[in-house]
Figure (tube, rainbow, N blue to C red):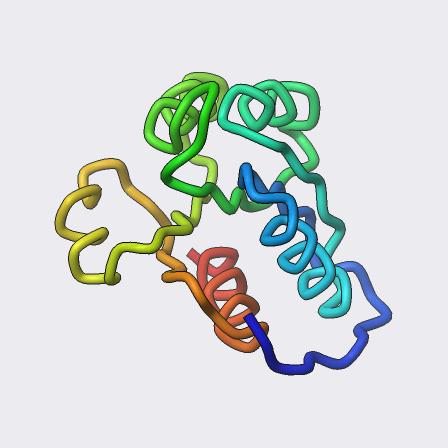
Length: 132
């Protein structure tokens, strides 16, 4: 997860990042903040679902890791969609994109990020999800 994105002064939206790996979560948070996004974070699927419930009206897109303790990404997505069915969710996975898309297409993800990814790719996928 590299590349340099320049700071953006105007707020672009709020993103909830749900990943159990602290280093990954913090790198994603910094990338998004540098691009002008407000970022909320959660340490696992259960925490992510709870954070979404607390801030559902503020969150524009959720970045959701697939493999996590305390609710995996798919289980967390079901809880989140129970609160707001139309929320835009981007799956973060180590699976190749075509495998993830085929396997979880019916869950209606707004995009996929395959680890490792660059800041440029992250921002591109988030911006695309926000336009849907």
